[in-house]
Image (cartoon, rainbow, N blue to C red; front, side):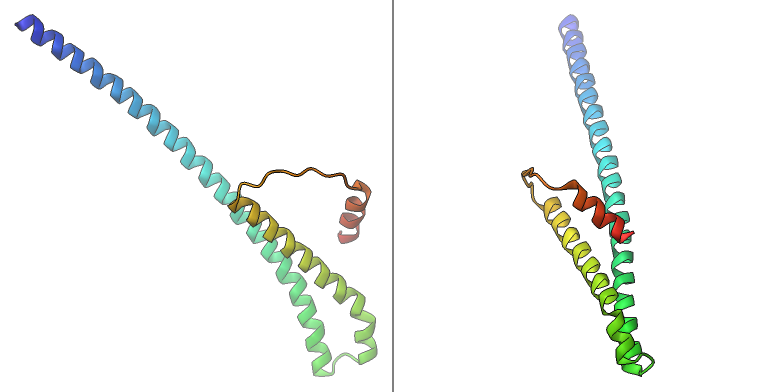
Length: 131
């Protein structure tokens, strides 16, 4: 009887140790997932900060020119000369916002990639022009 009790006790202890090991592995996996999610969240926060700053700059520039025109500090002719720059700022802000919306949509859905051919030269020229 003592032998059976001891065997049961040993078996029970081994089962508990196995369960503890499984729980420790699960905890480690949860910890790794938590760290990964925190890193992803930090990257997202940095991205939004950069995009917000760029949007703010473009919109502030446009508002500044419009305020100068309203105040009479800028003649209509001077304003007309600045229209291409204002248009470029508006287009940049619009493109940035469009890309941000597409990125956020891709984060909320599991989108399938749809590779397509494009002219890389156009991308480089647009980037150089922006800079």
